[in-house]
Image 1 (spheres, one colour):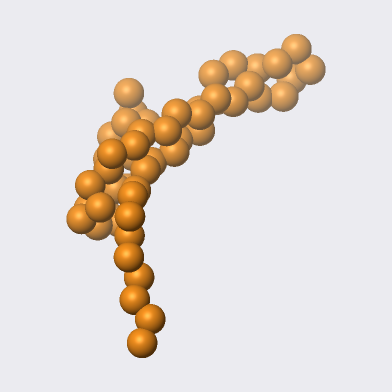
Image 2: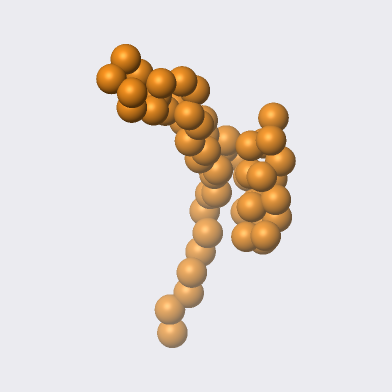
Amino acid sequence: MAQIVLKETSIKLHFQNGVKENGDPQLSSKTFNLVKPTASADQILQAADSIERL
């Protein structure tokens, strides 16, 4: 029987922080490490939504 072992979790968010000269969106990303491996998917989503509002 197979088992899943979660070793580390992180949240990566992509932000639009402007517009390039040609009109395309300028994107940047931020990765948040050290997310508790015991956090549920709902808790991680709630944290990402809270960070996004900042």
